[in-house]
Length: 91
Image 1 (cartoon, one colour):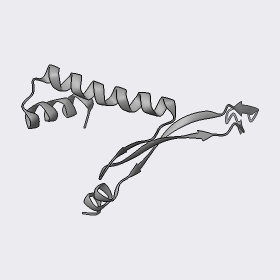
Image 2: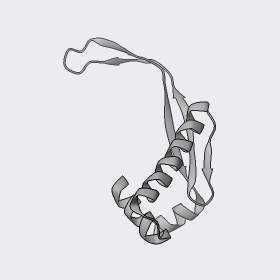
Image 3: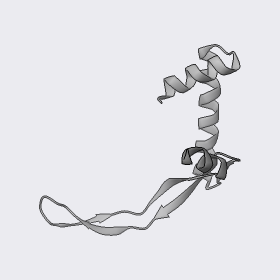
């Protein structure tokens, strides 16, 4: 499912125009992004939790040359599915 598919589904299910559904989706995604940037987790009960974690810096290898390369530390987003989502995926 793409972002456009999600907008179309939202518009159909709730009875919105696609422009309004797009604005609503953008607002939700923006809110999630801002919370994660601050380091706050975002919990959607039944769906799951988005949170950040820090990957420490490490030394890697360039596969072409075999030379050591420094990979810097970085913050990444993580998602943990909730119980309802896990149950729905079991089939």
